[in-house]
Amino acid sequence: MLYQVSQTAAKKWLLLQYWIPVLIYCSIIVYLSSLSYPSHSLPSFLLKLPLPTFLLNISDKLIHGVEYGILGILLYRAFHQSHRTITSISLAVICALAFGISDEFHQWFVPHRQADIWDVFADTIGATLFVFVWVLITKKYASFHQLLND
Image (tube, rainbow, N blue to C red):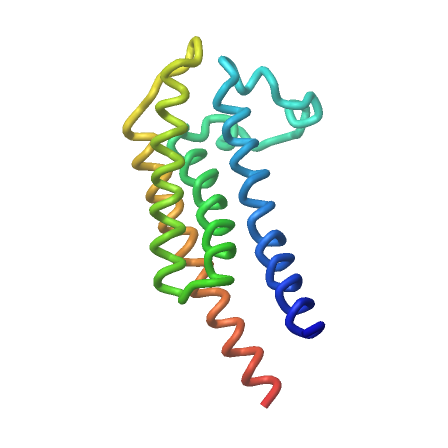
C-alpha cells in the first residue's frame, strides 16, 4: 500500500514538474501581450546588450514563431508524460494554436495593439517546427545513448 501511495505521489510530482513551466511561460506571454508597448517594458540591461544590427530588425513574425515554438516544446514535454509521441505532438500544436488565437483575441482589447491572423499563423508554424525538431533531436539522442550503453 505504501508503495502505491508513493508511486501516485511521484506521478503527481512528475506531472507538476512538466506543467508548471508551461503555466509560467503562458503567464509571461499573457503579461507581455497585455502591455501596450512591450519593448518599453524590457529590463534596461537587455536594451544595453551589444546586438548585431540584423537582430534589431527582426520580423515580428519570427519572434512569434520562436515564442510559440518554445511553448510547443514545453507543451509536448508535458503531454508526453502521459501520451504517446504522435498524440503529444498533436496536442502540443493544437494547444499552442488555441493559445495563440486567444492571445490575439486578448490583444484586440489592449490599447495600441492589434489582433493579426498572420501572428496566429506564425505561432502555429513555430510550434509545429520546434516540436518536430525537438522530437527528432530527443529520439536521436535516446537512440545514441542506448547504443553507448549496450
